Image 1 (cartoon, rainbow, N blue to C red):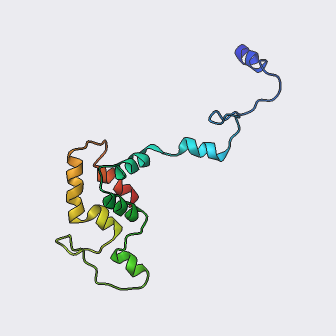
Image 2: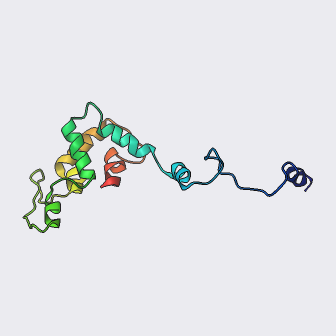
Length: 135
């Protein structure tokens, strides 16, 4: 109890809450968002997608897929045009969608396995950790 009385005498007046991440000690939502958001994972992924050794057409295809800009059968159906959908890269017929083209199709699955074989990531494959979250 004696320690508490000494501490309270150090500064006269009322106690106030100070938010350490802000230089003024106030609590703006912007600084709170900066503290809680996860910046590292996505940045590392986009560094990989736009790496100079990755062909630009591949980088753009991934970017378009993540932003729902690929002209796949599913997108064409959304605007009211019905098509018979079948992926030409797969043995079993499957509807073309961003998820199918970027992560679940036979062809892209073999590509991800080639990439994964040379990489070690904690908690699963590169595709599961990156593309699987985004699609």
